Length: 470
Image (cartoon, rainbow, N blue to C red; front, side, top):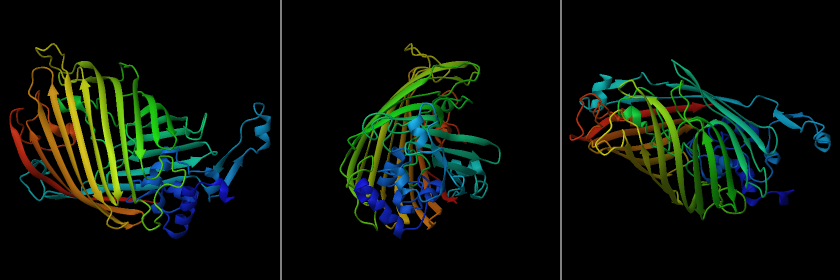
């Protein structure tokens, strides 16, 4: 029996026997399915360790034969005889005996040590519990055979309900294992080698920029890392090379449909566990399953065509072409992530300039995060984000810098607290009545400034984030 499994998969069984149960990709339904542990896939959830990234990349399946690791009872939908009768019979599958559902909530306690900061002035208080519980979530995740997995996430706020993600993943369609996989549904386009939640002190890995919003539009506008209806084809070759291409519906005014958007990405990992989790690579320390020495490099390209209503209430069509590169260097428990991209918009503002570029804007974005796992339940980190806007209408280039030091710690395996501070500064504020709120900033929002006026460093807030799942 053991010969059928990879060495990495056998280590997962060992970990499962000694660690506390917790979800993969912050979905407890997967933990119930496999009867496995928190540190099998996570450090401080939803942050994934190398094996958790491999599990996600494999379509939420264990290396080896996925069904060999399922601990939860299943209900068969058909039998093996149906396979022999295909296509005159429906190919069999299974469903879990108990629905694969999980629940959770998150929020933030916000304080403003500097009441004169613009964030403090905007809240008109030094301390607020208004966002203590901001969102509630329902997750679902299960497989129907060894090659097909489904999952979804629905998010609820006091004012709305939103289906953030719902996907069906068809794995190992052709050729060698992991070589051809298809993702269909709603989710975040794959632009990186890592999960969208690959940060200890931030919800998202990507710095999401809504460029039209920065320049006064009331529409959501286009941003790279958002949830869209999508179709994606991806591949992991020889365990080290990851490739992917996809189409997504993007963002547009409902009455005007833009063309579909296309993107692609590539990644390669040197050292450490293989990208697919197969083989004998990776950590052999059961107390520190995250620890490895590895370098992963990745890049992406994206072409998007969206429509939005600008600050002058006119419908505009904006074409975006973005190119980015990034890397993760890990040495034992120390990790450095860096990423940057150039996003060229041909019509993101209402004002055309003397250069002939109608409302064009070049956006340059970069961020880095340094972290160290002191204990399995305690991870300090510091994150730096930088955004530069270069309007093509003859306007002045402006930039925004954000520094977020913090620490994530698990009170219990399914209860996480994150203490972090926000420091902001800016070189000017976008013209045409815009602000840095479109990138999550607060400087320049209470006391508007022009593109030529710099804003010194402000201690915007000290925050305590709460996240629990069950």
